[in-house]
Length: 301
Image (cartoon, one colour):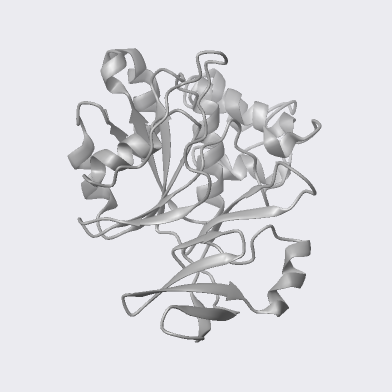
């Protein structure tokens, strides 16, 4: 499935696009899930004519990337399914680099065993040295990090090589330049780009729904709406520590089991943080994420 908007779904079958609707049996799934079919899903459908059809069956997924709905009843919103990698897009300025948002996106990828790529856009606005600590933190954890400028083209070719032959999902805060990066990756795409709001200093939403972008270099990218805050779905606070990959090397070494690495004494993770073996930003982001589960509307943090 290439894209879905409202009750209409665009399905690619043997290089032909079909506009499809859902069979009625999918309606009951809407009580729990905002969208029963998502970009990247493999389905079975019945042709009605040469351009339209009805989706009959959803085939098993290898993974799914989800977040909670923000408006109305709390439901799962599936961003994409059967994903090869997520690309966490952030910017150096306007809006500023937020490692807390990066770590939230990485948690979702870790939970689904999906490869993560970090794309830091707008490097033309600062000196690379200004974010060297952040870059090294994630590279030391063996995350793939690309430093790019959609404006000047710096780093775009290297990012394109990472995306080649993969189904990648672009996630990012509004205003970081996801659409601009996609335009740089795929010349002629001409996705709409908006500036940062002068009133709030935050990004405006440009993409309003998830859509697949087939690229000439052989990859497919799911372009997603920007967000202000990235909510976590399907992750319990007790699981969060195990999704920080540098915490895993200390598994079983804490005095208490389970250990949540917050207030417990003789905690191997806290000891590693104090002696600098775990980056301060990563541990502090973990604590914020853990504590946010007890806050009202924590899933939207």
